[in-house]
Length: 414
Image (cartoon, rainbow, N blue to C red; front, side, top):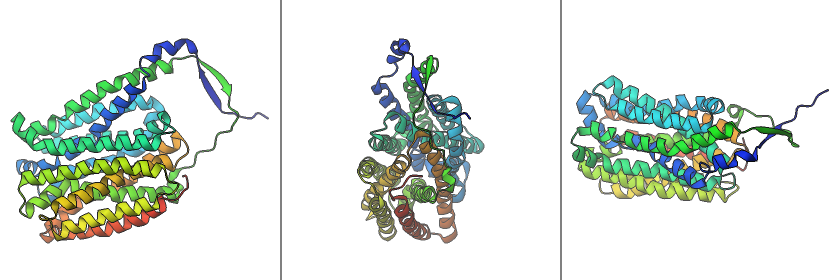
């Protein structure tokens, strides 16, 4: 009888000098930061422009909601495919391809056709999905003892990109003189910069793939992989991420419009939205750090859901006079929820493959749930004539997120 044992590759030391110039941790960190800057910027940039896009193409409120919904929906479609892509092509090459696709989607979105508008949104959604699923596994592999901290770094950077985009969209429109098309198209340059910065990681991975291996038997047998789709814990993580993302993307699509419809000038509404994104940076950085120091994160999950509910309630009761307060509370809640959801992926798995699988499932389910937010919020407003019904439904969903987060915060692994 033969016993199959896992093998461990040992690198040939002669090639160490060839890869050293590409292996510096600073290059990896710069690459991660620049890639992360792109992961929310192209979505946040469109929010202050929705009214102008609506006028350009004569879109209804529900059809305008699709501008935000389509990328979110295709994040859910693309997420399950990413683990297969990374196994076949390697994480580094897949990340590079996704960043280039993201830039192409940004350019497609500004072509003078409603069809290319939505096709560009589809491409953007798939590209972001690939990056969303790839990054937690990459962080877990490269920073195994600092995974929660690095999760905070790249989730914070994502929100910095969103804040920049929300704040600069209207000024870019005026500065470039090409309307909303020039303003949104300019973000393709950021994707190109990120692609160039990521090239050293692709070259490093290619050189390592050509290194001769000496195969040595591993002493510990490998634990058989279990599908996260059969795990109640994985479903709770997915529900927490999905509902939290639905709240985020609904407000990304409609918060400036809600404020403007209640009498706030469009420029000020954009600043309030940008401020909310800025505050998200605080939550996205601090909450994963706190989560990494805890064995259970139930209290953090309840706190994030409670802050979401408080911010939405204040927006419902005092949409203009309380706008800045609502923006601060919602920013902290949404940034913290994002960071906690990503932290769950690395904290609730015990391997890189497990993180990739849980990331694929949780983000597939999560973004399919989230996709209902922008278009549903717009449809409810169109049906009832006000934003009250949309905000009340969001309050109920914040309570559901609290229940899911209570389960996701248990000290177990998928």
